[in-house]
Amino acid sequence: MLDKLGGIALQPDAIRWLLTPAALKAELLQQIAKAKFAITIAALYLEDDEAGREILTALMEAKANNPQLDVTVLVDFHRARRGLIGHKGDSGNYFMYRKVIEAAKHPIKILGVPVKSREFMGVLHLKGFIIDDTVIYSGASLNNIYLHQGDKYRFDRYHVIESAELARSMRQMVQDYIVGDKAVTSLTQPKESEQLPDKQDVRTLKARLAKAKYDFKPTKIGNRITPVIGLGRKRNKLNKLVIDLVSQSSKSLFICTPYFNPPYILSRALSKHLKQGKRIDIVVGDKTSNDFFIPPEETFSTIGALPYMYEQSLRKFAKRQQWAIESGQLNIHLWKHGRNSYHLKGISADNRLHLITGSNLNPRAWALDLENGLLLQDESNAWTDKFEQEQQHILEHTERLYHYSQLETLNDYPAPVRKIMNRIRRLKADFLLRRIL
Image: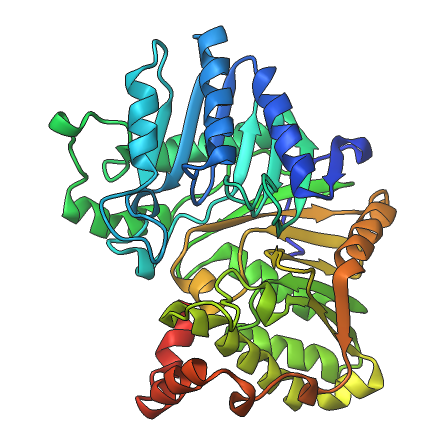
C-alpha cells in the first residue's frame, strides 16, 4: 500500500508543531476569529464546560461577524446526548447547543453522527479542525482538560498544516459522506419539534461510512501528505496503512498510544519487527495517566478497572518481549506527569514516514469506530529535526521500562480492582472486553 499511496504535495514550511494543549486552544481561537469562508470541525465531543463554551462562543461570534461563513460542527450523536460517566439525570452537551442556537440570529450547524446504534458499539472518532485552507489535526476533543483550562491537562499531539487542497479534500469528504446522510441529525432542534434519526437509517449508516474516502489529485513525488479514513475490519485503509508502516520499516519505529491493547495482527507485526533486529520505541501512558484512573483514596466505580486491564496487557507483551528489552531493541516508555493524563497516538517509521492519527491502535479503533489519520512522507528529510524535537518533548515525562516485573500484578491492585478482574476472568469475558475497550 505504501508503494502505491499517493499524496498531496506539501512544502517543508507548510506544517507547524504545537507542543502544548494551551497552544492548541490559542491557535483554534485565532484561526476561528479570522476565518473567511468555512469552518468544519470533527471531534468526539464539544463539552458543556468553560473551554467548550469558549470555543462555541468563538464559532458563534465568527458567524455573527460574517453571516456567509459556513460553520459545521460534527460530534458523536450518542456522546452528545448523555451526561458524563457516573452522572445521573437528564443531561448532555446538546442542551447547551440547543440553548445557544435558539438565541442566535445567525445559527451554525451542530450535527450528531450515530456511527452505530449504541455508543459502546462504535463512535465518531474522526479528527480535524478545518478552517479555510488550514487543517489543525489533533486527537483532542474540546473541553477543559484537553485545552488545559484548569490545573489538569490531557496531553495530545497538535499539528497545523497549511494546504488548500488538503483542507478541500477533508471538507469535501465530510460533506459527501456525513453531513447529507439521512442518519445524521441536528443537535440544535427545538425540543417540541425534535426529530431523531430513523433506527433503520442508523443501523445502515456503518455500511455507508465504510465507503468514505478522501478525493484529491495524488502525487508520488517529493514531500506529501495523505489523508486516510477507515471503519470496520474489512477493507480498512487506515488499519492496513499501520500494518504496512510496521512491516516495511527498515530500522526503527516510534509509537504513541494511550492504552496498550494492540489488535492481534498488529501485535504479531511488532513481534516480527523485533525478531528481524529492528528497534521499537513505545510511549504509553502509565495506568495513573489513564482517563479512567481513580486514585485509591477516592470512591471506586467499575469503570476504574480499565487502566489496570490495560496495564496487564502491557505486562504480558513486555514479558513476552523481555529479551528485546534487555538487548535495547524494545524501549517501553511510561508517561506520567502528576495527575495529568496521556492521549497521544501515532507512528513514525525510520523517521521518514509519520502517521498522525486519532486511532488508539486497539481492537475497538480497528473494528468499531470511525477513524482517520494523516500520513506525512518526508522524502527530503525536511521535517526530521522537528519530529525528533516533538519526540523528545513527548519523552520528557517518561520512565523507561527495564523489566516487565516493574509493572504490577493483580495481587498488587486495590481490593475492588482485584474483585472485578477476578470476576471478569471467571466469566471468561476478558476476550470480549478487549475487543470493545
